[in-house]
Image (tube, rainbow, N blue to C red; front, side, top):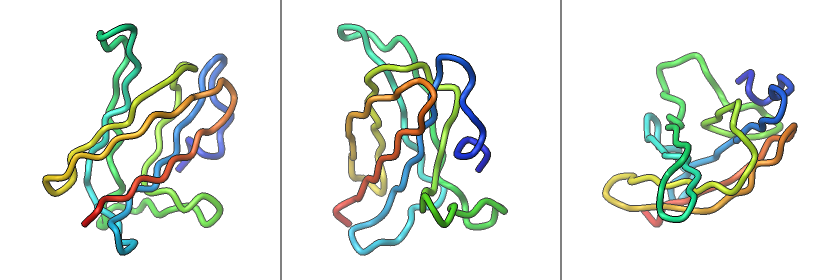
Length: 108
């Protein structure tokens, strides 16, 4: 995935995600929302789609990610998703010029 190896555009970062089941399987095609809030209002939001099995995108051996996004403005973000009926979420900080890595696991 080029987001992991191309330097982020000025004043932006990248996010690499590893979404797994409790026993380490991936959730192909699952969608996660990446959002930044000011107060209770979302001021920036995008979706990260987990790599599908039939696509020619595979995790990088060094990162082990199964989803990524570039051109993310720096700041505090929430990653939220609903996977097979289960809600998952976490907070991350995106830093300009860097890639932020996060692993999420469902309980299933």
